[in-house]
Image 1 (tube, rainbow, N blue to C red):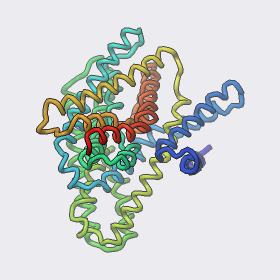
Image 2 (cartoon, rainbow, N blue to C red):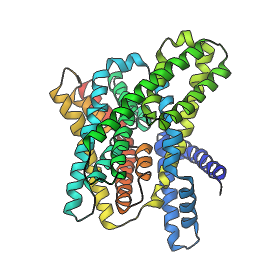
Image 3 (cartoon, rainbow, N blue to C red):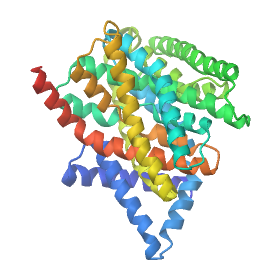
Image 4 (cartoon, rainbow, N blue to C red):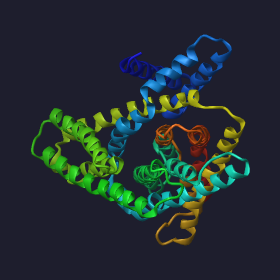
Length: 415
């Protein structure tokens, strides 16, 4: 099966599952797609008892696609640009302090907490995981994905302050998480048993600062080109070219393409957009990227459901996975709750708002893509199980309950 036919299968499944979900199940869009994709994956796994060859064929096709490369090298740039293009800077700016805190030191501390606890627990149950692999797991599982919860929280009537914080945090912590992951992975590939902090720091600065600056350059250049013409077809094509070309160049020069796309999207979507795009062009550009966002997220959440076929179901791996879910939840509570208690002037949230932000921090496709991109090893097999457990719990449990929890907390405070 070639790549085109695999894409046909994914799009067709996305459309079919979207219809079934909307018509019968009525879960939130991407949660419903992920749920149905997981059911299909379990059906394929059960084929072991039927011996029809479906399981081995599916696994071979997915290995051929290299799902991690598709997500990281193709889809991530489009998704981050689309998300940031529709984000209003004036709303983000009001919550810039808590967003910055959660997205930068928050991800760093989350990586350390998760990595340290998982390393300690794995040693207790005699599972061989190095500290470096545990920190890599902490980095890849720390970024949050707001796609599955934004619509739910909007219906629950949460404050704009909470909604903007969740959106802004997720946009930037994706980039920071990827930067930390890449720096740790480079350290792992060097064959070091310990972290070279000078090398790690250099890589971090190159990726993060370089990505931010490159995103500003791309954003201003795209803004200038859009401003110089008034033709919506050409302007839509320009945005596509800048996302594809800019993301590829970022990767080529070892800059954070994720951060570059976020900055470029925020710049183009907010900086004098009335001067750069006519009303008609703005309508076409925004609608085009809304559709791209919906389609790619549908394919993404369908795809991550199929990760089940890669999982090695050893008992100790499942134990690590279950423990990881608890560790990630506790880490999220600490990273959001403790700063809100200590730095009240910087993070001015009520206790109930903190609870909503903490519980609304879902993990998604980025975490799956990052863990699948690790070099083949026993540690990778363990981390795939741990990551998948966290993502499944996050999407199906947190995603389906966050709206109800938010409504109850809002009623309790009378807001």
